[in-house]
Picture 1 (cartoon, rainbow, N blue to C red):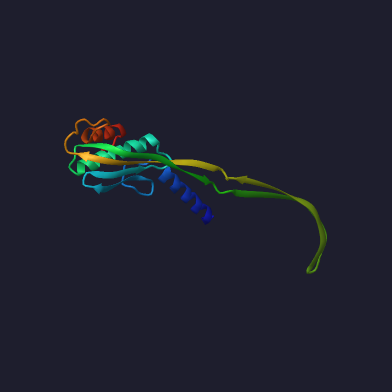
Picture 2: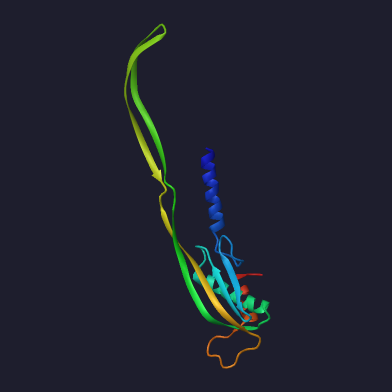
Length: 179
């Protein structure tokens, strides 16, 4: 019985930890963001989600972290000079359990003598075994990594997207209800 309670507790714990999309947080067991300074104005920023996090959410959270990194280092603007998105695919197979029930039908014939019994048994035993589990689930964990170059003033003549770090931070935090 104790073994079964441990399995149930573990299953509930796994569902609790993985049942929600990855929140905006520093990288941990369920995913999150990372960042590293490459040069004074260049940073690599990434976000890895769990199986309940869509790729759009992972991309938005990576952008949010890019904006925060720029602002934390005294910059107002940034551009993405390299972007990589992908996902890790995995599988999980539930354990197989079996439960067998038996029924015995028959009769006993015999005689009882002092300190002994003689007789015979005739009958049949029928059993049914039910199996459950063994399902395989496929999951995908999205990830995004951006290399950004930061600027104190808005660069002129740049042909790509120039992100306003403060505006981007405000908009994404509002969209996802992040304080």
